[in-house]
Image 1 (tube, rainbow, N blue to C red):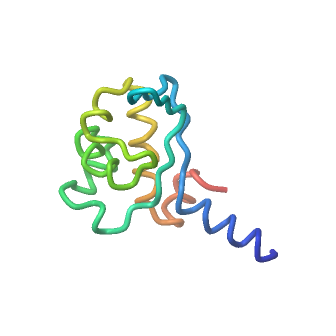
Image 2: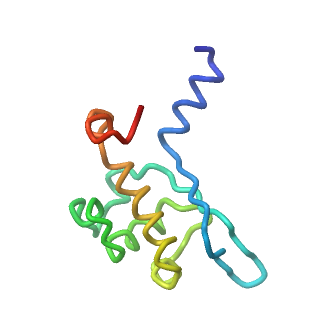
Image 3: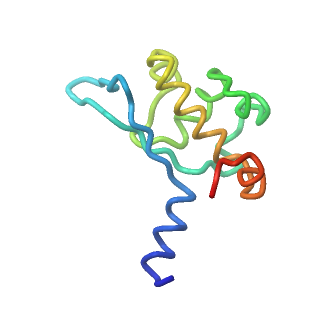
Length: 109
């Protein structure tokens, strides 16, 4: 593995891009995808990890504004189509699992 591959592999573990079925509109801007970064402990403040793992959308709305690019407010998140909210919440939950847990669940090769 060369240095570029290592950086790409490391980056892939700390970010996820969610393509939206229904683009997010904010003024004149339209966003077709949202980039999420792996949350650190402080970004989880105010949300219970078990709720995030259960894909609770209210819990995800507390975290998504801290880890999304573009930054999505809780109100914007909760006003999104359900399938887009669920996709984002699923990626947040995926970040919270250890590699071993992902492998045991068949989520990683």
